[in-house]
Image (tube, rainbow, N blue to C red):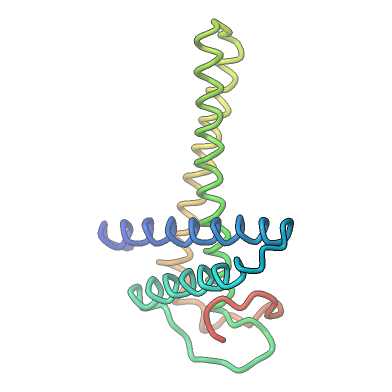
Length: 164
């Protein structure tokens, strides 16, 4: 199992990846709606920075595989993309909890105890979801990489994340 330092590194890197991906996504939405082509180089640069952070994280944790020239996504690329999506889910879970806490505060202030109790229950459930996401991320980074060498490649390369 990973040490405290590695777990802290992973958590910070996962949040960094998630926030870069979120910024990229928001700019893609703006560009798609308003056709602001000046955003495209920024979007590309954010994507490259996100990939750099992933490379740094993987190399720091010594997660690597041989470079492959195939039309299918490599095992490491699939792992990277899973981590990217889980990191974004973690951020969205946190944002959802924040919004529910604000709603909970309103119900408490207005004396709506039943609604407040129900929201408290839902917030607790979201914290459990958050813990599960964190556990999946830790498992993918600390337990699974050793098994990647025996795993067949999957899916097509529609979203190359590390090797290009």
